[in-house]
Image (cartoon, rainbow, N blue to C red; front, side, top):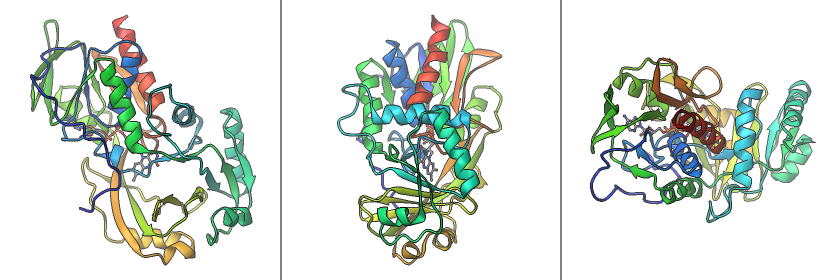
Length: 363
Ligand SMILES: Cc1cc2nc3c(=O)[nH]c(=O)nc-3n(C[C@H](O)[C@H](O)[C@H](O)COP(=O)(O)OP(=O)(O)OC[C@H]3O[C@@H](n4cnc5c(N)ncnc54)[C@H](O)[C@@H]3O)c2cc1C
């Protein structure tokens, strides 16, 4: 498999004995789990252990995405999360990030008049800065990009520094005494007297609450604890990285009709035909034809650029906005799942919502 572009601080395996007990176990060390851990720590609730199956944190969807911060999403429910998450990325708490979390290139959503009016109305409802933009103005911001329509420009959107974001969550969570363990696949959990016994590849852990933040594997993990599935769907999406430079150009996303996006990335431009096929958890191999699909949709100047690499990963959906909720029949179980295509942008908002659910039980 081609290496994916994101690199994360080596979080490493936890040294010393595996923790025997804690208040909360969070299953999954992607952005959902890490942001929940950080937000619990922010509330002074640090008796938490994050259990991640892989040897590195954020190595699945959270490390294989396009890292775009877009405050406006497809409906109001999602936009409530993305707008709040984007605000956090632009203005994180003092000391959270060692470098800016998002750059200031902005994003263009290409859309016909009707859809542009609908998007502008939503942007106004959520106080998201935006302005109309013509096709010629898009070409001025991205010389050579020949688009056939304008739309809306969002000056506060941009590209997220994933490594700095993950490091920020991890560092702040650890400072609040959260323990983070990698190589700790959760095999099962059972409720007994005095709490929940969680069985992992690193040892057994006793907790009062379990948070499932396992992305595409969330239903599988729930089954390992005898909890019902939410019938999540995992949809594979490809990113086709082309060798082209557009250093200060905005993200450009055609949201009207045959979708595509182009997102500058150093010596590359990452493109996607916004494909979406249902796959089983863990199916992230690139499909034959994905490159051709992207080339067929993006503007001509990009379509001819040489290939740098192609990769795919899964966006996981719960049939609407994310599920951040306690299980009605299992008061010890909370799910933070279904972050779809917005889990990076929305992570802080999702984490804070999850922490409120978890801490509410303890109060
Ligand atoms: C191609 C693509 C492009 C995207 N672009 C963007 C974008 O531009 N902007 C944006 O905001 N979002 C984007 N997203 C969406 C974003 O990446 C996801 O919403 C987000 O990463 C989901 O985070 P998560 O923590 O829920 O899942 P994951 O990152 O998959 O984390 C789940 C973790 O659970 C672990 N796990 C699973 N089973 C177990 C077990 N039994 N025990 C312990 N651990 C377990 C996994 O190893 C994994 O690390 C994109 C997604 C894709 C696929």
